Image (cartoon, rainbow, N blue to C red; front, top):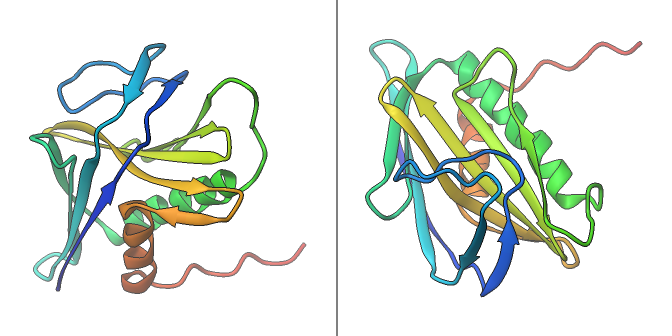
Length: 176
């Protein structure tokens, strides 16, 4: 089973600051730097089931020359799904909105391969996905949400939908 999603992410001419730590595909840090995003970026993912061991191969590409891949168990991908769901919920909310851009990081303490950064700027929430494996690290613009009209764009949402469809449904939490 092989699924490939490609989404163009056009960031309008906007001036923003990353307050968390992140790295571009070329290894430059995003921490504390002013960035001007004026060119469209096409990011993509490929999720492939590996029947020989039950794992999945995940490849993330920034549309340029930066990419990273790894083989992940179902348990690891369930963690990625959970982190993505929490990041999406936060990105849709008005929590953490201020006059200055603020970046909030989502990750699991036990699984450091996946990092989602959500940056809130005006009515927009920008989503960045970092994939860290033995072969390296890549951070890509994964999507954006216009909170005022709840419009979602980017491969972040395609990847989340794909994870929802191929992974077992999470067990319901017992009521307290």
